[in-house]
Image: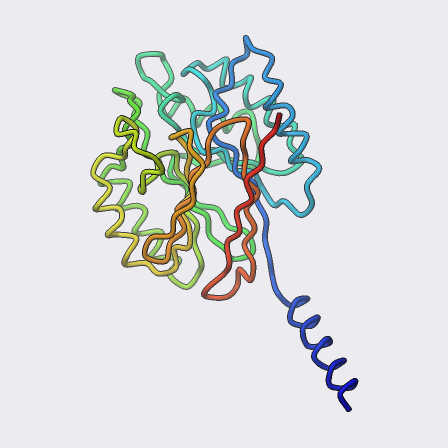
Length: 259
């Protein structure tokens, strides 16, 4: 009888495990691509990501190029297209500057021209995988670029609208500038993050905010939301969402370093 009971428990565990629905994506931040350099680490990261199993997409969380230049962006996109999976992009403080003839509108148009999957009309956009919603929120400035993030009132209003529209789904937000500082670099802080954090407190379906910018690897859970900050190359993160259809999915972030 004990043997039969043991076999039943084993069968039950295997059944539950097989029914669990997991999802994997990769975050790469602060590439700061420079066509004048060899970019060997970026090439190694791409090759390493291409070896991974079950990756749905890659998200680049800002400072994708080292200076706001249209040719640099095109070169970065050409290299990024060597990935075997779709990729998405968030803007950072080094990506745009109207004084350098690279407005946010210019940036988006170049991205749309060079890749097929990424077709938003704005740096703020949403996409879905398996009913899990991912939101890109833009805190960059193209008029007077700087290292302090700034999420405008219009961005927060748009974000709240998207969260209300998707209140029945789990959400992860991607952005360049963290809301919870991963280190004491005040020049990199987000300007007045309180209103943004208060907005998040009203939406329990937001499970994580994933960012870069600080050059620091950090994971902090605040009010039930996992705030993940990833340093630039040679680091990247493999992020697994386990049981993503449940109200409380488990988010597991593995940091990798290429040498």
